[in-house]
Length: 135
Image 1 (cartoon, rainbow, N blue to C red):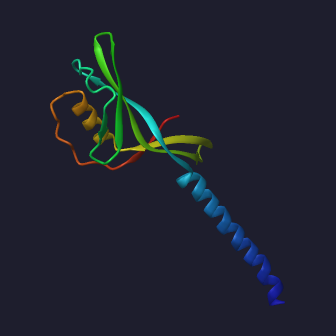
Image 2 (spheres, rainbow, N blue to C red):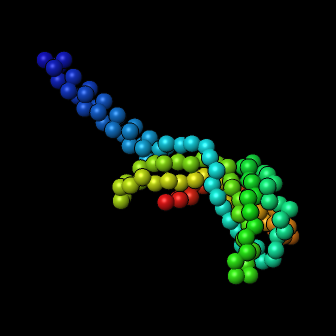
Image 3 (cartoon, helix red, strand yellow):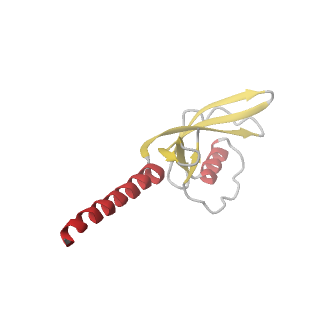
C-alpha cells in the first residue's frame, strides 16, 4: 500500500524538478555563443584614421576592432566591433525571446577614447560584464 502512494509522489517531485531546471536554463542561461557586436562612439573632434583596422584589448580583456570613422553633420563617430558573448533566452513577462550581449561598457568606452586619440579619462571602477538587450 505504501509503494502505490510512493510512485505518484516521486513522479510529481520529478516533474517539478524538471520544470524548475527547464525554466532556469531557458530564462537565465539560454543559448550562448561567442561573437562580435558593433558599437560606436561620438568623438568631439576628428579621431584620425590611423586606428581603423587596429585591434585593441579593453582593460577587462575583451578584444575590440576599430572598423570605421564616419562624419555626419560635422560630428565624427568611431565604429568598432567588440568580441563577447551573445545570449538568446526566454523573457517571461511578456513572453518573448530576448537577444542580449555581455560587455563591460566603461572599459569599451575607455578603449574607444584611447583609440580615437582623445586624452585618457580616468577609468572608473569596472562594472564587469553586464548583459545589454539588443532586440
